[in-house]
Image 1 (cartoon, rainbow, N blue to C red):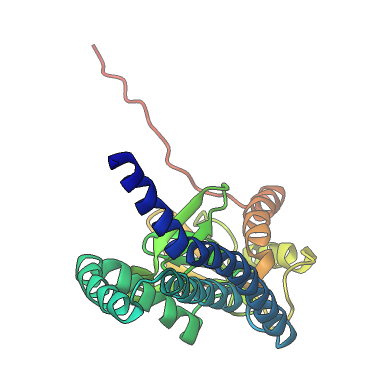
Image 2: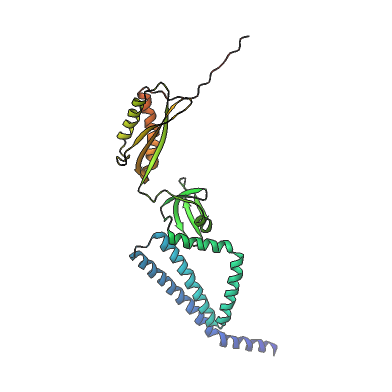
Length: 270
């Protein structure tokens, strides 16, 4: 009798909840496909509207999470879970989780601020929070950078949005500033002409704004020339290193002395 009782109870559960469970599974499968199609359509619309790549990624993630939460609530309601009670539970749990994860909510808010004010976008080279690199991805809670030596850095959006950000990719041009020191016996005019000849021969250095060479300091052992040239932002480091190397070679060829510390050995008389 006891066994038959359990069999009957199981049969009643299957009769009562079986169709609902099967229907809920179907809703989950179809709903997941619908969510996928909505996201695909949203991405297509954003591409057509020429949305910024970082904004597209952020909105896609946000819409995906919202749709999945809605789908879960619908599936639970189909099974028989009281959705109003479930919503109240979610609200209470959300409050508790929010208090426990204030940092994560701050990161979410930071992500929203980044999307609104756009201090940088994917592909920009930035410096922030003591790190520098090319923006690889802007997610809901974090931003990923790729460093020049191909390391990935993940920075929370909360601290990123509240700190100083240097964006090296915003402007089309940048200034390369270098200081060259020559000996006090060197001719100032000849030194300027030698450095300028290097500048004029470099094809990546822009003519406008015009390059400038000025005596910036009469130091202890050298006359320092501050050299400023303008280049396209993507050519900055190429010109920076070329100018150092080529100016050294040109000064040597012109017989202009570049001072360096000398060590004098003093011998004691015995």
